Image 1 (cartoon, rainbow, N blue to C red):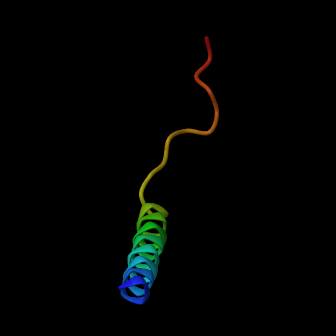
Image 2: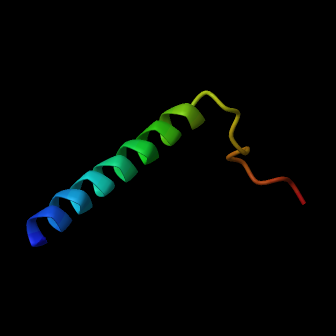
Length: 40
């Protein structure tokens, strides 16, 4: 069972990393917040 859990954990981690990368790539084209702070 240990081997199975290790394999599943690796797959889960890989999926999470791929999802995070995809989200970052998709957020690139989206308009981000202004880097310059608003003047007081």
